[in-house]
Length: 245
Length: 393
Image (tube, rainbow over all chains, first blue to last red):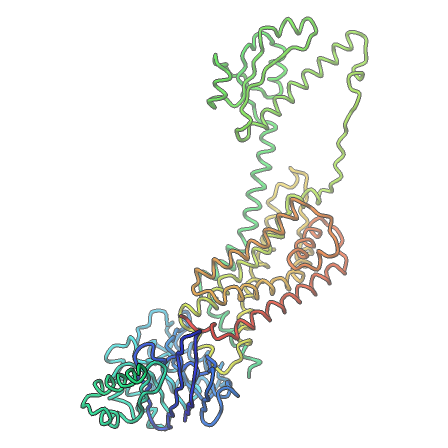
């Protein structure tokens, strides 16, 4: 469970995040939907403790991110936009490095790695160096290390970026599975189909602010549009007009 | 948990680096071998040249040689090789057809017989490389001939030849054989520092700027591990590779010592096992200082290329202190042992010269270098705590 209250962050004069509040519940997939530069990545970075907010509060399973960032990091599994692997290590070694950094005892790390290799059906590439991996294989490895410590909350920054259709489908499948297991899944995206196909809850962000929040159906209804894309444009447009006046 | 995090990072950096050909070649081959190899080659070349210059024939075009057969015969005995002279001697030297030419003018015979100074003319171009040594050698031959004849003339008049030698300069070089060697080996401490720098360089670049470039730094920093532990692991891995490089480099220098023509140039090179054993612990704090500096300097480089450019500046620093030490050999003062880099270079030089080292000097060097390590680590820690560190854009 993630609760964000009135989050703010500026870079110089630019207000990247300007009063964002929302919550993401356990057993749900929540999307941060917004155009490029809307403030999604900055919001996520503050969530996963890489950046300090100028103001506002973030609670992860009840723990304040600013009070105990290390404890929060243990509760989070994060797939950032940058998801580079170590090319000269095998997929298994990449995953086990994170297991060790998460403090898993070696036996537990090995068992958990095996489990993830099977879940993500990547046993055949586990012993290979990641140097020549395809985008899909890289994503699987990055996902496995993200989830190695069985985090309750999973954050993903534009997870389908650069993936082909098949990889995207299996990723969606995987996220549904996490939801079914009761995880709190929060991801950022600018792709409507993804939101429509996956999400229980949508938070639309424009210019660093939340302009609308609700289930995909509720948002369509509110905007009076049949397609989510039209609803999105309309909702953002209203916000933009509001800013002008 | 966080105590062992540095160890986890250290192990991973080492494992990954051991699989990287570029890192290995630099740490285990180029770093350790470049210095000793350059050393042996340069020394052998200079020594071979000195020996060759003293014995090889000196070709000189001589105009008017038939007027002074005795002079020519005496010169030929010392290695002069008589060449036929062209009509325009000065022109031939100017156009670089000849290095050196001697003209015996028509008045030579008359002057010689009358006991007046008989002039000979030497043509050369002093702006040309290597000519100075030849001119000096020919002048030496001519002077020798002149002095012998001066002595003969004095004796023929019943005077002692010593009358013409009011002052006799006797050169007494007080350099010990090691001392003379150490002068030539003044650059050796630099090579050692350089070796440690090269050994850790690529690991430092790869584990900082490289991580950022490949996008693995941001996910790494999201792990529940304090950043200074990650920093410590990377510094220790860099230091280990620097140390490996330095150790191999020292052994290579030891082996290189056997291939130096020490007996021919009359210098001995005091780099036996016991000196190596003394140098290694002395250099250990410096290796740490180099490692932490390399990590600090590369921390914010956006790419490996940029990091390399930053490190090039770091590499200049030990070169400067070495050059200062070898060209302006200041009397060693206590304060010098307080300055990291300078203190190690000074002590190594003294060790090579076979001079005793005061315990205070070593203690000062170690203590102050370790203090510098802490200082730079503190600076690196501060820079690692900034938000900017992990962000690519």
